Image (cartoon, rainbow over all chains, first blue to last red; front, side, top):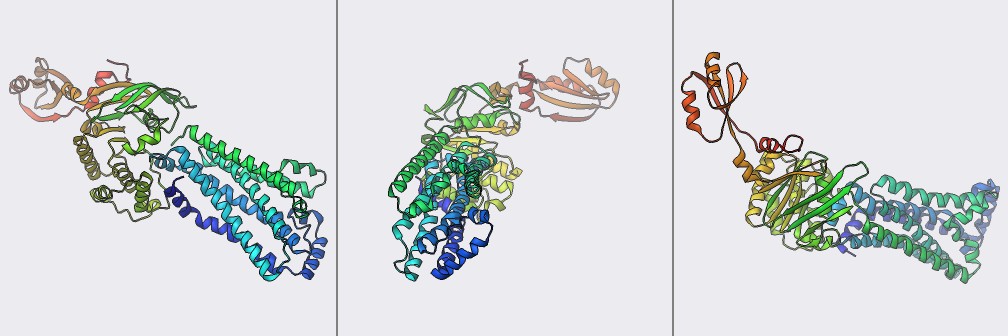
Length: 267
Length: 295
């Protein structure tokens, strides 16, 4: 880990990371301030009038009248999945592949820092940014809920759900980071690093809309965020899926480091 | 100091370098000459450990350039051929960033160089002209006072005045005992500053020579204009080595016997007389043949 590089990455990306965080935060604040048990019931009725598939695709189909379920469905059906996805694909690409593509990497490597040190630093920046996006939003969600509706939120279930959502986001960022480490140009890095995460997300959406294509859910990592199952309280499910997600992340990032350390850099 | 042995790296396009061998001695200024696309940058990429060679090795002070790349970097001042910096930084921020990355503290050398090249480091790099970026690159390569310089086309983008400033800097560093490798496609640049040069073409080294020994081989040439064509005809029958340019214009090549030339010329009415510098390039090319097949 090299603090100078970390700071430089922070300097060129903080606005973006903050932007994504605030974008999510906007929905967190709206969701909580819009909540009141009666209107939630009314909103549910309104959603029921919408075409079935449309609401399902955006994860609004299960908006419950109970705060935890309402908030989880509101946030974790769509916003808390797509925003970190966008954040991570942009960051992953610009942290490695862009430096190689432009030739900046030549300068980074002409300093007495090994390739491993450079790539680990950039990885740490990516992970820190992702953690920041989640931590701020979960923190604000907890504080706001407690302040407005003390005791109504099932904090443990909400945190478990967020843990799984966070780990899924990390795996997805790992896919983009790996692509960024494999390819020497941003064009191919983005094709793969954006393509795969978006396909995974689209697969989840389609599996929810269409009964025929329901089996697509096995093809998408996003369906691991099974809101119903986690909120019903299934600790084994949370523990097992977390372990698997952590394992996959470790594999993805380790592969990124090894590949970047070994490959030919055309800089 | 720098040793390249059997270095081979082929790209998918068929370009690359093939079985390169050369050594650069400590304290030497080594010119690495070749046209664009000859493999100069590929060689340099290998010396800095950016790529894995298909075959062969590069070492600097006995340290493997690829495996132990990080160990070598503080000894090397590297100027990439393509200017690419972190574009959102200002020039000064970039210099500070590089010093921090190298963990070098001495700012004196940096400030001296900024002054020497008359660079204003305050604008953002993306707003800088090509020449400013080149200066910034040179300062980055020199400011940590390394013992080896690897410079990829260092004078490109510099105006003639700054090229001279740069050449003086190279001379100074040479006097300080630094080892310098500079690639170029301009012959005169190498001729002025280097002890030894090699020419690379299509990925193969076609010639390695001491610049001094080339200087010796250099012939002097003079162009003489005669008043009459008859005088010229008579002159051509003399023992001097000549070449006809026009009906009353001839080129004379001499290897040092000026007296013979002037004695002969004194016999005719001469309208014009100018000396012609033969560049080392001509010698080099003559010596090795234009296609690098050897003469």
